[in-house]
Image 1 (cartoon, helix red, strand yellow):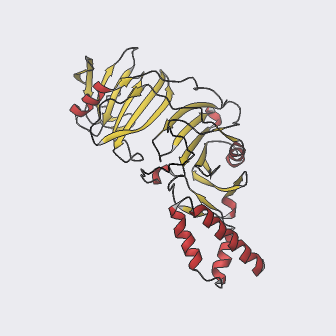
Image 2 (cartoon, rainbow, N blue to C red):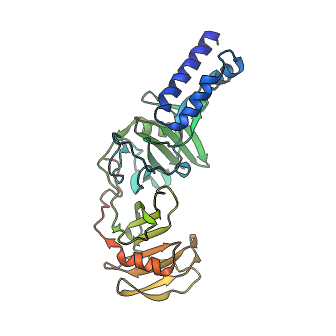
Length: 332
């Protein structure tokens, strides 16, 4: 490669950084570092050229920080329960099985299952504020989606993730689990991703009373053997991306008592019970209050609060109509 092509590549990198840095404060650190380096340092130039770099934002939900400021002119959906993207194509047999959303700036998720053929999960994260660290990706890890550079990674065994920005508002992460030729299939799904803005995350629960230091932080809707299920989460006020402090759930299955005995308790005026912290089928479980409601399903409220607080939350939870019409369907 000639010195001219080296310098041209560096110019393209710098231009990309300048463009991306306008959308993310993290990018400014990288931009400043590049502007301060000497253009006569061949080692840096060779390293950049050899990497054939691409600058992208990694959509890693666990690494997101909590932000409360919202850009007034942002083109993102005002309602965080509205899902902005969906695949325009999926392999035959893949049906939607889960939807989840959290308030801005946390991500939203949609999952499609093909049974033994694998699973596809789409995570959508707003780009109005920082969405994660900026990364330089080597050429083998690059993808191109409608002219925009993104990255493909092996998340862990049997999982491949493609990450890219379809516009200046959202970051998409597409994870394929246990699928044959995941990079090729993922590339086609990414190429045929389309705007949705009609699909919603509509569960059957709504918090009534919550302690002053807690607020709604997410809703997850999915199907179980017994039918539709809803999980409603609350976190510390101002921390929408943090782990849930309290979860209210509505589903057909009776709560797992693990190695403890239920203690009778009046919940919502009916005969319910409480369960202390315990080891269940899915591991350690928080303190829980539960009651069977109209229709035979179980309302449970659990979390890192005392029994009196959990009972008060359970008594105030509202049961509302939900929407499961999307379950078991391919993208429409």
